[in-house]
Image (cartoon, rainbow, N blue to C red; front, side, top):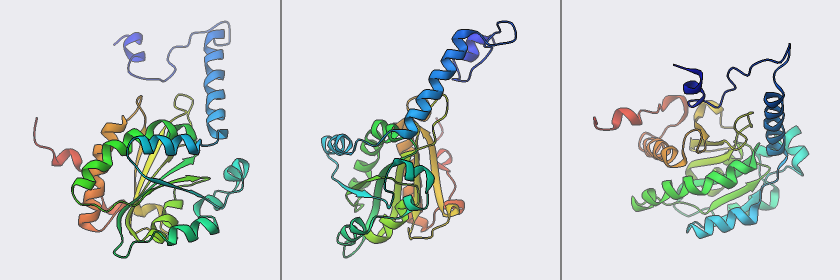
Length: 246
């Protein structure tokens, strides 16, 4: 396989060449641009109105919430504050707790790359939720959260009385992927849930795992989590094994 063939398969930097003892100027500038994009992705604030409008255009009702983080800088320095809801928003979600509970609560949060949530959350949810609703799932209003970490979904899910929570948020940017979305699902969410009790589907973006394909994987995991009443290390992604031979 030739280098051009390999370059077509990966975004990795291959055979950059050399100018004396240094890389060529173009390779250096490309690296600096990628680094700047990653830094910008971390610093970017989530455009909540635009995201809520996009969800509404897709026929998805949403509510907003905040974590206990005060600003973006504190979000990066105090991940513990991003795992719990602000007091007033916690009370508002308590009021949404359905008498017989929700089957699924969805949280869309900024995480470490708000751009990922803005670009990929709506296509993913648009591909995932209609089939679940058609099967009779009771799905809570989507919570659009700022200053959120993965465990914020535990607080949200517990207050809503949801059997499952699905958290979509921006992953830590890489030099080739400043808009990668991560999806984390948890059965019986509650404050203090261990990471080993969740399932994760990562690198959701057109250049990684496309949202439509991620929706298929998540749909299988959500259905199996509800059927088996488990998630995390006891729930493996066996979706491929469940498909009929091609």
